[in-house]
Image (tube, rainbow over all chains, first blue to last red; front, side, top):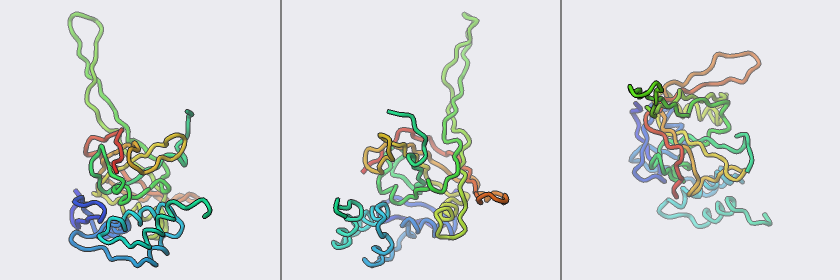
Length: 90
Length: 163
């Protein structure tokens, strides 16, 4: 029954979802879904580090998104990997 | 091997999409929401099986065979947040009437939460939201809302996460 706005996710290739209204689309945007045909606005490395903090789950999500991008930022990947898998002395 | 309560062990996700009902991917979970912490209680998300009687003139005993399979009425009661950034409010807006997706139950493994990783077993319930209602206020109780789901396609109780 869901109709209206079609969204895609950078990690999911051809999969798409249909938001029932703009509020629903905004909630899906929280999970990384963007309107079909648009490109997600890129966060800066500082913005991502600030948003993720020390949370390994958020870091894993951000890492997956970054690695799925055409040009993963090396320093960001290293930072997020360290948050996901901290070394014993951390 | 031990008995357990689901608290802190079982995780519930809402996935807006899935590669397949038998093999959702890790990316599907990344693009979904872990709604566990917002849940008060769940009901349904189980099968109800009917039997079909097959009497015959040769016996007073009435044998039966397995009949049709249906899903029990399924709903989830959530706490309601008071800010748009609360998980509870994100979940409420994520599940408006008419939204569809999957409720994924990730059962514990070896006494701990199972990782969202390849080969982890999950239950996958295709859902469509039939209603999303904020409960009337009750003095002294946390505000709540309830989402009722229909099950539009056959669930898979033994799906395996794919990489």
